[in-house]
Image (cartoon, rainbow, N blue to C red; front, side):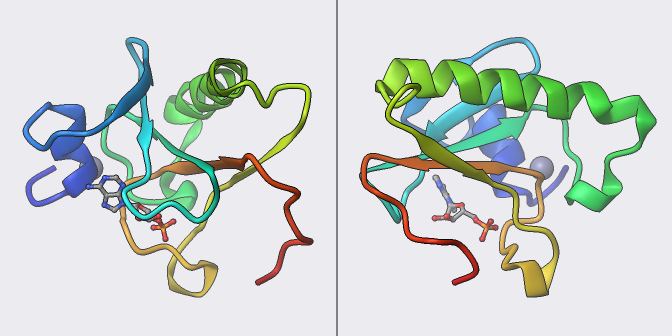
Length: 114
Ligand code: AMP
Ligand code: ZN
């Protein structure tokens, strides 16, 4: 989608520090990490928010979760533990309107609801 920063990253038009990629999803280091491990996982196809994922795109969420497992293994936190978060719409803290999941780890995370 025109003007979407994560579409541009998926297309290779904006660089990223890639962590994992398959045919459906891309995972890369967050540019402003909130934890020692902070990876963003996106579907390559544009969908703005979690609420815009219809039945036809549920496979993207499945692929994002599978990618989270793989990223956790690659980062060595699959057994120690980590957190995955999807912010949805403004009150949910969403700033970039291309669906994405945060994978956070590398420290003992406090209880959520910041
Ligand atoms: P959210 O608040 O859930 O929309 O989170 C958007 C996230 O994307 C933030 O954690 C940003 O630091 C991150 N972000 C924005 N632009 C980039 C970029 N070019 N490369 C990597 N991460 C980015
Ligand atoms: Zn997009």
